[in-house]
Length: 97
Length: 236
Image 1 (cartoon, rainbow over the protein chains, first blue to last red):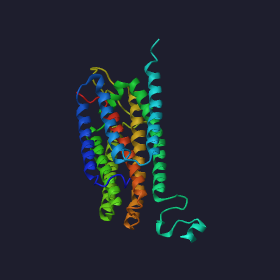
Image 2 (cartoon, rainbow over the protein chains, first blue to last red):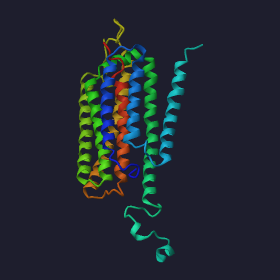
Image 3 (cartoon, one colour):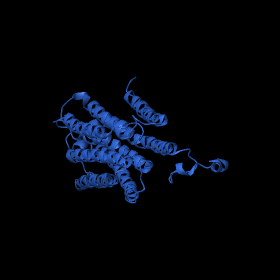
């Protein structure tokens, strides 16, 4: 990690920090709007963008020297999506006949 | 150096005191530690994932009751806590950068500020919990949630049994998150002690990096908990 860049990463850290704070303000504002079925999608979309910023830049997944790190992150997300996706597709289709 | 080759030792001048003998070099040792923390975080994703899954199922079934219950939580305190955690994540990356660039004072200040922000988060959480206790919104024998209107459905009132499921999930998910924060504060106390003693160098500061990974992960969990629990159906 110390080898990936010679320039100071501080600018990038502060930019990500500002983006995360802005995202928090945006999600609170979006919650007060009536977006009908899209409120949840907007809230989760903003949360996912924020989480991705933290993982890529604060947790250094973007510059991780070790490919195995990326594999573990992708594996965790894959199994989380299996858990949520299969469960919710079951519950969402129970009333179909 | 024929002597060290003979007995299979690394040359002395390359041997950092923190490098364990079963690693080829410091880089490999650092990658192994980091990967170990990432695997642990993957198990944490599944740990919290089960709770998120339970939440999604019940939210789908009892959406109106969940929206009514969510509206009784203090959104301002939740948003403040989100900002507090985001700031603490910034001070964590500053601590890692300080360790990489041998800035001992910045490292210690960053660790202390991170811990203060963590304590502020727990304090605000405590205020929130106190409100919920006073309003009898804590699941159990004294739970009460009568005549609370369902947002967007005039004349309809939330079913207290379904609202109780929301508050059970609220307390388990935020409580488990708070427990992670308390463990994080313990880890950072240890990091601060090590930093104070000057143990971290640009060559070796792996505990700061993997302690930071843990802290950021707990931040990510909160980034999802905040909209899911506090912002279900807030529009007037």
